[in-house]
Image (cartoon, rainbow, N blue to C red):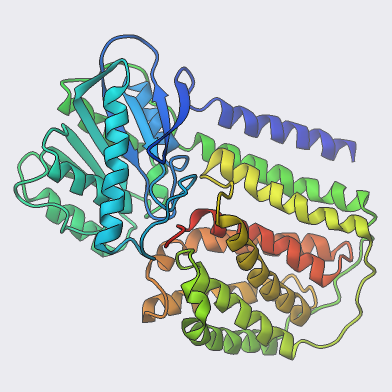
Length: 473
């Protein structure tokens, strides 16, 4: 036990060092202007400098784009990162579910206008030298803004989703960046837009897709090289920081929390046992049938009108599947419950919220997200409870059920039952479900009741979904 505790201390210290040391030397401040939360990063040194506004994508936040703040500040730029409407700490809802209406376009442009105005007002910023960087939805927003404001010096659009935001006339000095593993449509858009003008270029980053492109060193090098060229050369000769440092720190903290679950279970009086369940193809077949029913039923249920983009469909989908699994689950012995076991729930919340918030993206609920979180949590708890009961805690069956869940959700996105954005986030969703399965395996080994395993594991999946998907209205 002492060795485990020592290892935990080392991991926590290592994770904190990785996260805390990111962007060393830059001064940071958080402000809210006209309702728009802004993170401002000031590089070291004096004198009037160019400024850069950085915009995140759908389900992102200013914290998700923090590595660009580190990179650009290291190069001498003053950086403003914003939470767009419906995202992060921004309490103003996005007007529609998928940021596809004129009202959403106007809201995003207003948010960018606030960020640009604040950047220009900062001491030490040359208001005539402003650039924009955006990813996915944010790439479309900054490209559209630059096209309408010729005074923007340069723009970098990462994973630009549509070519309609640019023309052969505007904007000037536009770099499109796309991951080599992204869907072909993104690469086609990047190439098409870049070919419209001689002062544009395209960069294809090898080995990355829609999310990992944000952490690729080549993406960051291409961004600063483009801006340096537009502003007449680099402001500093400092080496660029590793953009995945915060993410690595978050991963180390996650590992620490996973390892810490064992001492916690010993502390609350859990009794190690051998799981009694075994793998059955019939169980997987039942899960597949429940998934098919859930995909259709979720499209019809009124939860699709929840003011949390896409989450209403996913919550209904998880609920129907969980009910189907419970209907076919055999009756079995129920382990003894000890009140101290309830500590696993807040532990799971902290284990997911702290690493995500510190090292990845905004993970603290604000406003309506609190009650929406409870709905999503309840839906995934029912799904997890059904999976626990029908699998009997078998560590081979639970991943199979999770795989069926993901496959059904992907099928729903492809067939139009839910928004295609779901396909872009399948990789992190798979990671969350595997994390939930890992916790289930550990809790089953200590004879924790299935309902408590479900509530604990559901926090790991539902919390990131509820705090990242946009609030809409």
